[in-house]
Every structure is written in C-alpha cells, then in structure tokens.
Image 1: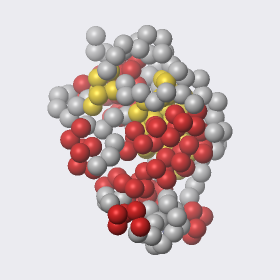
Image 2: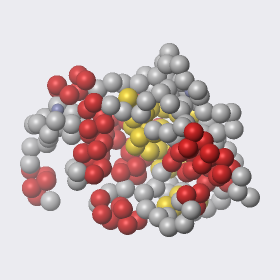
Image 3: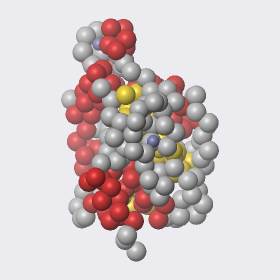
Image 4: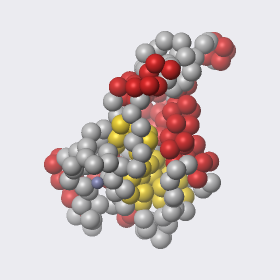
Length: 223
Ligand SMILES: [Zn+2]
Ligand SMILES: [Zn+2]
C-alpha cells in the first residue's frame, strides 16, 4: 500500500512514467467521442443501425472511442491489476459528463459479481459511477446485484422496486450492448422509467450484434 502511494504513477497505456490515466504521448492518441448518436453513442456521422425503439436504454453517453490508449488502459486497470488507475479513468468520464444534461433521479452501475470484485480488489464500475454521481450531483446507489450462476437473463437482480425512477446506469465499456441491455432490462422490470447509459468508452460503431439482439429478445420475453 505504501509502495503504491509513493511509487511514481505510470501511464495505463504504455506503462511509462507519467500522470494517470495517460502520459502526454498516449493522451494525444486518445480519441474523444463528443456528441455521438444520442441513443447509442455511435460516433457522429457514422453509418450505423441504431438500437431499436424498444431497447431498454433510452440514451447513451460515451467519453472515448475504445481503441489505442483507451483500450490499453481499461485492460491494464481491469485485468493487469492496476486498479489504482480507476479513479483517474473515472475523472476522465466525469469530465465528459459535465457537458451532458442528465435527466435522472439516481446513478447506479453495472455490478460485477462479488467473487470477481474480490479477485480484482475493486468494483470498477462503482468507482466510475461514484465520480459520475458527484459530477451530476445525484445520489449513487447500488441498485443491481450480479450473479455468476444461472441463465444469462438472470445475471442481474434489482435490489429494490424502482417505480418511475429515472436511472443513469454507468459501465466501463459498451461493445455489443448486451451486458448493458441485461442490466437496464432488470432495472426496467423493477419499475424504472428512463434508463440512460454512461460509459467510459464505446467499441466500434455496431450498436447491438445479432447475438445480443436475440439475448435481449429472450430477456424481454420473460414474464
Ligand atoms: Zn503512455
Ligand atoms: Zn445510434
């Protein structure tokens, strides 16, 4: 712990000396995603098949394009043990959220199963959500529980009923959208009104692949 406190910080991308999350050289290659598609956050002007009208997520904000130093940083912080990098990544997402008008009552996050949190030493999405909540001045509340067993559709459970509550859901990366869809769908089934998604990074321009589309259909066809 002391070593962690006094060691010089290392860029989460190239691991060279520099401020978190990126050194100056890597920061230059970071691709910001200002004002993408309001619904799925595809980069502006990108031809894309947007999320369908009945998607459980009403809008998406992404701070960065998931490539280069951003992808390297997430991998380093998530699986290479550099968990001290999450607060810096959270501040980067928080900066993006200052530009956004948020219509929500509460902030929550896509929970990681407890066993994985213990192994990694951090629920990284909670770190992101805590900073986002601070920036948008809303309470940050654990609304979801994650489970490793059971069918995919049962991966998340709502901790409480949420009648008419508008939720800002936070995660690190949106790729196909399947994970966020499952989490959002769980919130909606607990009664949530609008669910908006805020992520550090968005991978590609594909909104929701065929696989996750069928997953989402399965989720919504549950009673
Ligand atoms: Zn670097
Ligand atoms: Zn879109």
